[in-house]
Length: 481
Image (cartoon, rainbow, N blue to C red; front, side):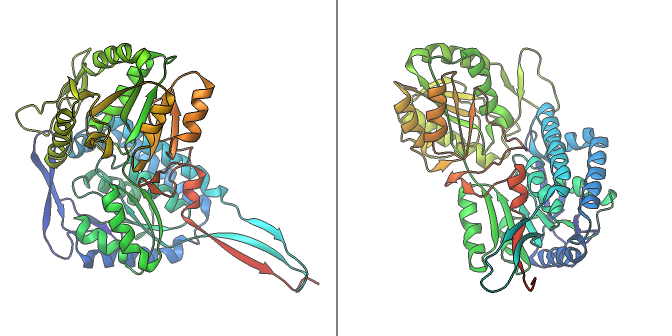
C-alpha cells in the first residue's frame, strides 16, 4: 500500500481500509491506497491550519527557493514519475512526459512570481484627518485542492504552486483512481524540506472525503477541476460558509475552420487537440464547424491524420507512421462515450472513421469522427470526454458562431483563419473564456484560464491565478498632521 501524507507523516488512515489503483490499459491492480475518512480529513486540515501560522510568515524568497529545490528533485525523478503516470492514468509515455514538463514549467512560473506580490497606496480625502490608505495582500489559509484523473499532475501544479507561493497551506485530494504520482510529488516536497503540514495528501472517494474537505470550517479556499455536475455539488456544499472558490469545469469547445485556413495545419492541430490523452480533456476541440468551401479537403486531411492513431499500451511505442493513443481511464467513461456516439449515428450522423472498442483487456476505443449528426444531439449538447469528434458543415461565419454558442459550456474556442475580421468576430462573439487562432487548445501558464457559462468561474494560470489565493486587505493610516 502507498500511504497518504498528513502532517509530514505517512499514514494508512483511520479506517485501515484500502482502495485498488487499476491500470486502465491492462485492468490489473497496480497497488492500493488508503480509503480516507472524515477523521483523516480533519487531521489533514488541522495539520495544514497549524502549519499556516508559520508558513504565512515565511519569507517569500525562502518559499520560492523551497519550490525550486522540489523542482530539481522532480527533474531528477522525471523518468520514474512519467512511468508512474503512464500506468495509473493510461496515457502514452510521450504524453505523460509532456505532462511532467508542463508541471515543471508551471512550478517554475509561480516560484518566480512568489516575490512579485504587490499592494497599492491610495491618497484619501482629508475630511476626517490627514490619512492615506494601503491595500495589503495576505494569504487566505488552508486550501482544498481537488484534482481530476485526466491530468493529475498539471492540474495539481496549477493549484499547488500559486497556493504555496502566496503563503497558503494545502490539502490535496487527488482523484481516487490517480493518486500515486501525486503522492510521489508530495514525497519530493518533503525531501525538499517543506515544513510538515504545509502540503498534505488524502486519498479516497470524493463523496466521502471530498465533501468533508469542502465543508470543513478551517478550509478557506476551494480549488476544483472536474465535471460541471460535481462542480455544482461542491458549490452547494461551500456556499453556506461563503468559501472562496475557483471552478474549472466541463467544456465542449467549438473549432471553426474558415475558407482561407491552412488546411493541412488545421487538420493536424485539430487531431492533436481532440485526441491527445485519448480525448479526455475539459479543454479540447470537441465540436468542429467547417465552411462548406473547404469541408471535403479538411475531412480528407483530417481522416488521413486521425487514421494514424493506434490504440495500445502507453509504454510501447507505435511503429511509424502510427501514433500511439492510450485507453480511456475507466470502463464507465467508455460506455458513456459509446452511448453518445450511438445517439449521433441514430440522429443522422455518418460514421467517417473508428467507432469501435477493441476486444481484450483495457478501456481502449478507436479515435472516431462522425459527420453532421443532429445539431441538438448528445455530442453537441453534452461534453464528450473521449476520442469522438463530431463535424458539421456550415455555410458561413454567422452559422458557425451561432452553433458554437448553442451550448451550456464556455471553456474555450478556436478558429483557423488568417482573416483579421473573422478573428475579431470569433474573439468577441463566441462565448468562451479562452480563444486560440491557428493553434490547438492548450493552457499556457502565462495566461489566465477559466470558463464562462457552465464551464465554471475564476481563473487559474497567469498572475491572475496567484491573485485568487490572496485576500486584499484595506488599511487606513491616519493621525498624520
